[in-house]
Length: 486
Image 1 (cartoon, rainbow, N blue to C red):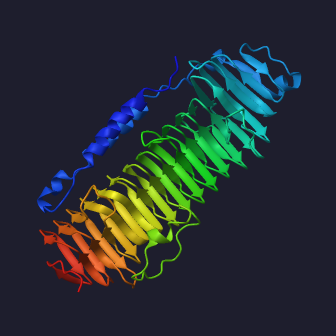
Image 2 (cartoon, rainbow, N blue to C red):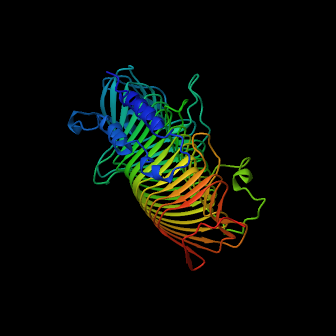
Image 3 (tube, one colour):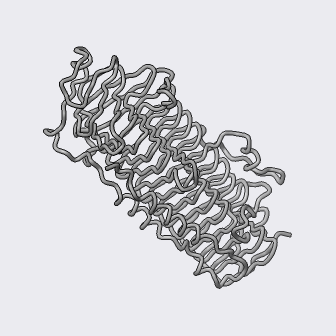
């Protein structure tokens, strides 16, 4: 039975709930603040995504068909059922578990039935290919690549990828079916991938990486999935001339990225994470450097708009999503030549520790940016930008050359509003044409502590402002008045 997991349809239902929960037009009343929670249980969505997975990499090794790559290629024949030799390739055509050992130059090709499950156990292999993938899944129900405990495995491409008929292969591991990569829970196995002319790992269906230590050096994306990408309890290092990790669906229903308790070190010329769908992260550590990192900030002038500056350039964001981004917890160190966290929909920060250096916006949500808790240290051209900014808790320490927080008219879903219910906010602005908190609509301060230093204007709003509680300190002076720009 093809294990193209049923959770895809569940995800779509959750996505409908997500969008429905984020489309309430917020207008004026500060008293409605408590109703402005996300309305979406992201933790439940995440757990549903992972619980739907069924790895097949747990078979006893003694039951596996053993393939010695060097011997079989040298003899150009195979006595293993379901395995055939074809010049510089090992062709697997039957379902089952196969243990691969040794070195070869060529390709492991899986070409089996569309309902077949296949498990490839890598037992210290080295596979090199000058013009194609090291492992190519042409057809199968699903394929699991299992890293055997205590082994180091290396997959290399050194030259231009050649197509397979109408299939443009562009990854050292390239799969047209659901792909699972599984490793031992103790982290004692490794997978090293070097892709001189293409991507590291590509799935044209869905990709699930579990308990794996993977290091990738690639010219194109380090990891890419067409449908959904799930990563759990993994340790991943990527150096890429393009995106680090990419979810690339044809529609907004696909390309979603789900991450749980995983550690990442990514250096990329463009985005570290990019998805055409939404992204949910819970736990782990993220060390991301994009586009060479954030330079020293210079004062912003009145005619400066970082978004316009970047319009024709390369996107080099830490996290970039066409859908929403929800971060439930984790430790994040971002050094970005573009936005740190960017969503064309909503951003939710439930908790976590963040150190963000950004040459543009640290957080940019086209619709809503919500911070419920966490510790955020920000050094950026602009701290937070979105149509609706909602701060319900946490500690924000913002150093910016532009506005500290900016509620701008980026979307018709919400009315431009900055609302602070609780939390501790320190905004220190580099000398220039800037505002501590800027709203193109309304501004509400209902609680918390806000300290603003060095701003040309502490507050700038176009419509209404209400002070309903909390502590406001401007350049060392305590005030209970939201003074608009003069």
